[in-house]
Every structure is written in structure tokens, then in C-alpha cells.
Image 1 (cartoon, rainbow, N blue to C red):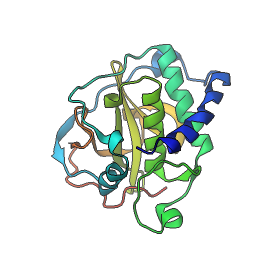
Image 2: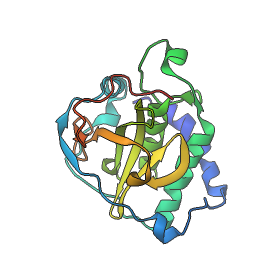
Image 3: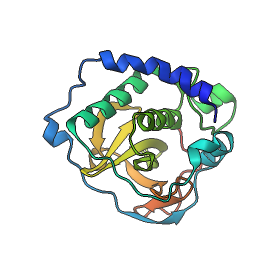
Image 4: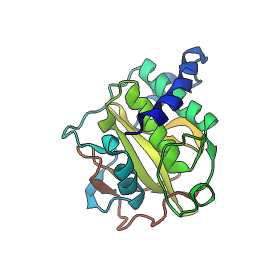
Length: 207
């Protein structure tokens, strides 16, 4: 795996220790959510398959399903990382950056689209010691019906969404999105459906 890319990104994350605690409305309320009901196996996004061809170490199956044990400190850390990545990565489409419709990658140059934000958050949270099986790349449709990617964080208190369009960590049911599919907890290379969507958007990232 391209560890040099991750090291250069992670080096900046030390600023987290100096951050003032991220404001969260009534901590006990903010830490409560529900669980997403998932369906059967569905075709994985092309972008994930291409990403795995370049970062094979990021795509290994564990065979275990492990949820985050949510505490106020863990919730605060998740919120800090979400906010930091949103503030330090500039939105840029794959077409503008790579000249292709869809490419998932780490935003090592400080630019990327929604999947790139998701991948970086996933990696930084895993580096913090959170089980990577609980950090699930998820495809949704936004308010305009367009494809978008978010990170679903699965905890023992329910599931939460990290989004490049919003700094707050929200229960999945409090977002305006229609959930389409996401990674399986036991194997990141198996994707499962959510709701009644038969197919995910061909092009995930729109912003």
C-alpha cells in the first residue's frame, strides 16, 4: 500500500490534539441512532475495485463484524476527524483532477471528491484504533437524486454518517439521503443493498 501517501496526510493530523472540543448538541442525544437494515449482495462500485487494485492492503477481508464501542471521547474524536478532513480537503471532481469520470483515491494533494473524503476518514479513524469493519463506505442518492458517497460508522449505539457536505456527525436517519448500498462488515469487497434500490448510480461522485 502507498504508505508514503498516508504518512504525509497523517502527519498533519497531530493538530487534532490542539483542537477545542467540537460542539455537539446534547452529547447523550447526539450519540443515539438506529441501525440500517441491509439486504443481499449487490455489485460493488467500479471505483472501489479500481482503488483496491492500487491499495490492496486496504481491501482485505477480516471475516469479523465488529462495532465501535461508543463513548463520549470516541464520539468527539470521530467528529474531530470528520471536521478536520472537511476543512483540509478541497472539493474537486475526478474529471478536473484526473481526466476520468470516476477514480477513488486518497486526496494526497489536498483535493478530491466525495469518495476521496470517505477513504481518508476511513483510514484516519482506523489508524486511531477503531475497527475498520465498522467504517463502511456507503453509496446514497442526495436531495437531487444524484449519486454521493458517505462513510457510515457502525457503533453499539446505532449508525452515524460522516459527510463532506456537513461537519456534524449525524444519525443515518437524520440525513436527507436515500441509502443505496454499502460494504459488508465481514468483507469490504462484498457490497450489500439498502432499501429497495436495485442498482447504484453508475457515477457515484457529484461533489
